[in-house]
Image 1 (cartoon, helix red, strand yellow):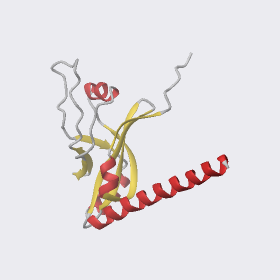
Image 2 (cartoon, helix red, strand yellow):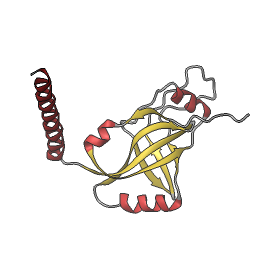
Image 3 (cartoon, one colour):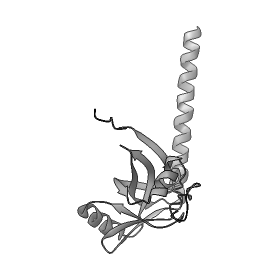
Image 4 (tube, one colour):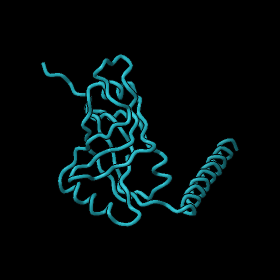
Length: 162
């Protein structure tokens, strides 16, 4: 009898600050080369993407500054928490990212870390930094949308009660 695979997407960590600080131009899903204790620590839902970035070095993509805490029950084989991790991407994707990231103001940032079919995946994005007024404008638009939705729902409630 065949085993059924877990086909869901279980989110481990998300980088909300990246969406606030950058204009997202393009996103990619890629795998990670991890040690066993890193996977066990990620299964506990412990990771931080806040200071993470991707660097292309020697034709390979590397993920830097992702904090995966040491596995509590690990022994001398435990991993270091902030080591750089290799990303698994196709050659054409790496070449495209390398050429785009070389342009002024562009960077590659991680957006989310999750399990997909029991494998750890990371969603990375080619992004361009926002200016301060862009950030304020985005916050203002979100606030205006929230106020509009509140007014509409309040009007609907008054209609129902009348």
